[in-house]
Structure formats: C-alpha cells, structure tokens
Length: 424
Image (cartoon, rainbow, N blue to C red; front, side):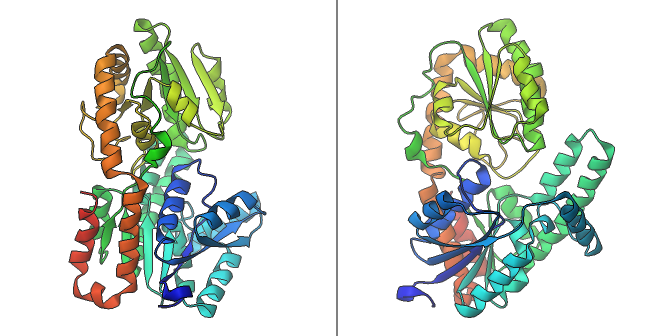
C-alpha cells in the first residue's frame, strides 16, 4: 500500500468540484469521498474555471486532498468542436466527452506517475474518459445512473425533433460506453438494485449496491407532517434539467388548478437553481412561487405540507425524496420519480401516475393523520437504510475489494453480494 501511514491511496477524478452541496451529484460525490477518507488517503482531481476557496476548505475539512485543475470557461465554438470530435470517435458527447479536459488528463497522468495510488476512483461515467490516464491502476467506477436510459427518456421529453433525434443517438452511444466502462473497471457501484442488475448484465465483474443517501441528522429537528397554515406543495430540483422543467410546468398548469378546486388555499413552491424564462413565467400563475437558487432548502422543507415529484424521466434514486423523508415530509411521486427506492405505496410514499397525480396530492393534504403516518414510516426507512454513514461503508468495501486483486479474483460474486447485503 502506498501513501502516508501505510493507508491505502485512492486517486479520485470527477467532472466538477463536488461543492456546494446543492444538487444530487455533488451530495453523493462529497459524502462518499468523505467516507473513503476515513480509511484511505484520498486525492481528488477536478476541473475548475477559477479559485473556489469554499470548495477547497470543505474538501480539506472532509480529509480530501484537492488537486484543482484550471480549465477555460466553456464557449459555444469549443463545444461544437467537442461534439465533432465525439462524433468522429463514435463516442457520446452528453454525459461523457463534454467533460474531457486535456489539462485534467495531464494532471491525472502526473499524479499517477509521481505517487502511485492503490485505486483510481472514477466518479460518474464521464470520468471514464480519463481511464487511460490511470495506466494499470485498478479502477472503481461509481455509476450514479443508467446514463443511456436517462438520455433516452430525456429525448422523449423534447418538443424539438432535431434535439429529440440527437439525444436518442446519444443514448445509444452512452449504452456502448457503459459496457466499455464496466468491462474496464475492477469494481462498479450502482445506486439501485435495478441499476445493479443492468450493469451486471453488461458484464461487470462486481457491482456494489451503494444507494443515494441523506444526512439524516441535518433534518432531525423538523416535525413529521404537522405543518400549519395553507397547504404548500413543494417541488425541489435543478431547473437547468429538462425533466425538472417539465415536472414544474405540469404541477403549475395541471396539478395546482385541480387541487385548488378542492383546497382553495393550496400553493405551489418551485425551489431550484437556474430557472429559465419558462419556469420564471410560472410565477405569474395564481398560487405559484418560483424561488430560484436558495442558500438552504431546510426552511422550505419545514414549511411544506407535501413534496411532489411528478417526474416521467430520469433514473437512479432521488435525493430530493430522501431529503423529504428525513425532513418528515410526506411525498407524492410518479413511479418513475421513485425508481430505485425500496418503498411501499401507502406506507412510505404515495405513488400515482400523472393522470391521477392531482387526486393523490389532494388526498394526502386532506388526510393529515394518514400523511403523518406515511411520514413517520418514511423517516424510519431513510434512517435505517439511506443514511450516508451506512452507505459510505459500502463505498469503502468496494475500494478495498478493488485494491485487493487476490480477494477479487477468488470471490468476485461473493464480493458483489456483500455490497448488496450491507443495505438490504
């Protein structure tokens, strides 16, 4: 083993600094790397377009050595060239080639040659673009999603035929890259049993089930479904992502008017960074509030009566649902929105397809006792199964397995199963 104090050495690479903790990808990356740093020396290489003292301080406090690599800000001409290069190489641009930086590649090669790590930890599929720079170092890849499926579903959401066609082509390219990635990695991590089966079927040698999680302690002081005043329906998510825009539009134009027919005082609050003109325009509708970026979501979780997740695209597991569970907030979701979570309809969550979504929201808002029961079960579930402290142990086990070729070669199936058992 290399590194200080004979600790195993992990060299991680991700497509952006995992800070601030204002989106799902950042949360997962930060908490898993923090967990790895309790048992390993962890260095992180990430591109940055400028100094970010807050990120550097947060990562340092978490025990992570940050090697930030300065890269240029994105320009339209440069991105067009990236699309062309990806097309020639038969590689996906979205969620992959878009995130390749020559400076990051050079920094990774230098770090590997000067201080050989025991494991290279690739965060997201897009970090697989740097796999060759890792040389012969064993690879662990954390697959936050089934990226090909995410692109395919997003394509179906598009109203522009050319963009729909482009994303469908990207989905096929991503599927090929997923297969290459799991074939190259010694160990993969997936966020749900469904994702785990998908990557195992692609030929992955070992797939650990490490679901998304939440810091339960941060929400422990919030009450369970005991909010007062006019009901607030909360939608939480980055407004730069088209499926979230579609969901917000659906809530504001379809769900809220139908809910207000039975509960006139009901309001919709849309919380999330980067709302475009279409989302901001929703605030002109009666009962709709659009906050944009907020410094802290906890006050909004505290004031809401129900979290609404009417997504029809995406994959993985929803950190916004786990946050609501930890906050004691009942959740109404489409089945797609709750994919990857081990939940039972009517016990931990209320599931409804879009045609019956408004009806489900009305039911949960009118029946406060049932809402409180659902919230209590959900909070217990998230504490038992989805706290980051437990999930971090799975990430540590995955890295340890990748760093131990003998154990991996002898018992690959048992190692993968052990990862699943730790959360089941």
